[in-house]
Length: 262
Image 1: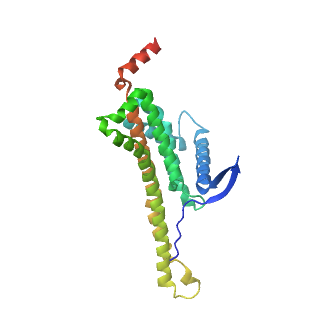
Image 2: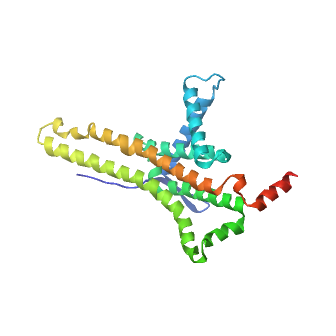
Image 3: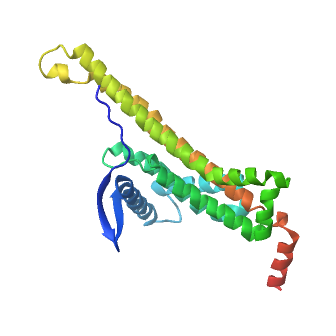
């Protein structure tokens, strides 16, 4: 059984101002996903009618589901984050699905991609906390409920994006590895049972027909959808907690806003 599992490869490397820049399979796949989403957005929005029909009905239903999910998870006051959550989900889901083409590598199978998404979410959470509660209150939050907990609170804050990134990457990459092992094992089993038959019949991997396709429905399609949903759900929880309703903001914020309005 010949099994070789490697990470995303590098197509070529060039130097810009003396700095080596590598164009990897992940970078090309990310570009392909971006182009695909732009094309899909153009197709579904080029003919918007007041009385929707066909594809427009489906798209509007999906958009309403997205806004409903954001409202129920983050609150109605945070609906402005719905486009970000939707973009994150589509990038993650299609990034996992593009690996099925065997032409492009799965973008979510690269830790650098999921880590970048997690860091953007973390930066958004920190920005929201500082904006809503103030920089001093944000720093003070690390010392609560007691000062002794400060190191643990800092570690917890750093661990959030790491856990988000590794959870998404680990499940997708683990599924890819498992599917590779299954393919190799089924090829070896076919060779063991039918290899004695002379001619081309003995070289056909019969056991690779059907079984991998069924497993792929879970490890690629279902798992890709679930991991994208979980990542977005965690993002909504973290960002939503940093953006509470206006009435829950500190009194000084309310006064400041009143002064600005007058």
